[in-house]
Length: 229
Ligand code: 0O2
Image (cartoon, rainbow, N blue to C red; front, side, top):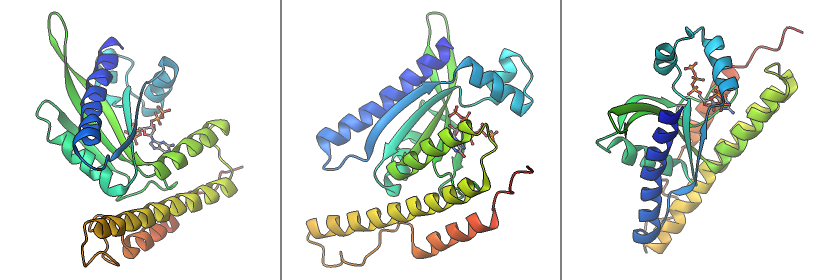
């Protein structure tokens, strides 16, 4: 776990440096909040069992990628991809996988961008490549995910259908809010820049009406089956 703790520290430093740079050198800061967590042994064992992973250190290291987790909260969806681009261009980070749950939300409505990276940790006698999961999401996505997480654990996974439906609706409302905030932000920025084409010009990264409608259809199409009891 010491290796994972050090991996978190390395990634936190990278993101903190970016945040400080944005704060002091640029006029806007895409990073609202940075947090981290080391998976508890109980939660790790539960995940190992759930995934049918052999109970060996090597297998756990290879198959469980979110023992070390760093979460970055941004204001806008475009900020998420900006942070992602800045991170993946850093030469000492190796990207093992990228899971874009914004382009393809989970059936329950979960949205976030996950980057699974390996970061070198320099120990006294060797360099260890430590796997860290970086979750990048907006404030609205984070609000939704933390409530959904609490509900999921409260019902031990068997969440009543009524709540699942409401959660999907709330996820859609969060996606709408993100789209509206991004559009407003673009308009204000265009006005501030004295641009003549500010009003009504949607940012290429702002979710369009088509994207929102695709999101609604996706959630409808992937309706979670009601529990058996
Ligand atoms: P905790 O309590 O946060 O540690 P896989 O089996 O590989 O397909 P895996 O390993 O679960 O999937 O990877 P994924 O999808 O990247 O999920 C890793 C973490 O993302 C989860 O860890 C959660 O923190 C978060 N996450 C993923 N899906 C959801 C979701 O539907 N709702 C919420 N609230 N969070 C989610 P853990 O171990 O599940 O939980």
